[in-house]
Image (cartoon, rainbow, N blue to C red; front, side):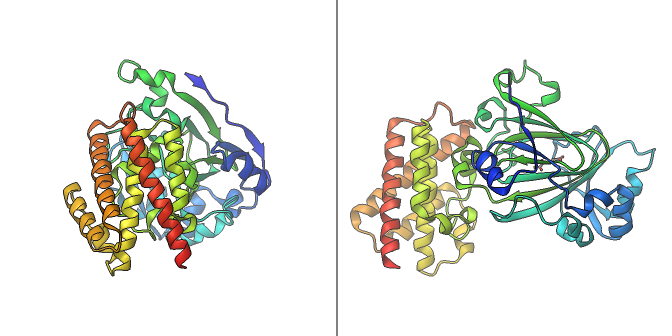
Length: 396
Ligand SMILES: O=C(O)CCC(=O)C(=O)O
């Protein structure tokens, strides 16, 4: 195992935070990061019950505290939850996890402003509140994470995002393909031998500290005592799309993500910038991933053409089999104003990219898949996308 050190720094300026940590995707603990928050001086379990006790929250329960199974949460008042937490006879571990804080306006007001969030868009702010012994399994998220520890302590086990092939993630069609079956605090090397080579870090987050956890870094999170945390997910940077976790998401994403929805970045960065990412992937020798990625943008381009002809987003996103996707794409291409030769190329690219997608979903693996031919096709698609972007630009 390679041990990574996560730096701890005292509140840096926004510029320093962005240049040294946010841009290069490096986790960091910011000491005193939450200094301005009212929550730091007021929040305790009892206080939350006092000010927002009548609000409903979602509570998930696990007998051993390891929250690695899909469970239906139970709805109860925050006051009832705090009573449960303080009942010495409770045997199971009940956790308010990933609770959208906007349903608790009395509390949301105490955690403002979100430090270091001003340069990018906030997706969601969540409350995590539970006893010692909760464990969130090793997984990644697609968003940049500003994780604030308001009360109690939590321990984070981190794994470098490029070590995805050592993390034994669940299958791509499992419904939870971002979750690993490795338990960092009790690694079973018989079952998970490749995890021995993973680059790992351990961080203990204390009250008043904030952890910046870049998108796609793996994390397993354990509460060391009664703990209240608030995390904010930010839209991830486009450059993160070349990490293996992002490719995994592309493999199972709906093919026709229309431009306004495509990670909400399509319009901001333009198709040309996305094409750069195909080239980056090819430089990293991820040929199958590059083909998949390029095919995905081709799908978005076709969605764009479809929307110009009056297709609605629901029609583009309605669940379809890969075969139906192909037929749908063919119909958009057919009725488009593109030249016959271009139409023929698009059909070939769609076939190749859908075949790569099927293969990756079936094997749950990118490594070792991807021929030079895949790389060539990815580049052709990317060049096409670039030329179309230029054409769109000159129209406006
Ligand atoms: O605090 C936890 O239990 C998990 C937090 C987490 O996974 C996250 O913020 O993404």
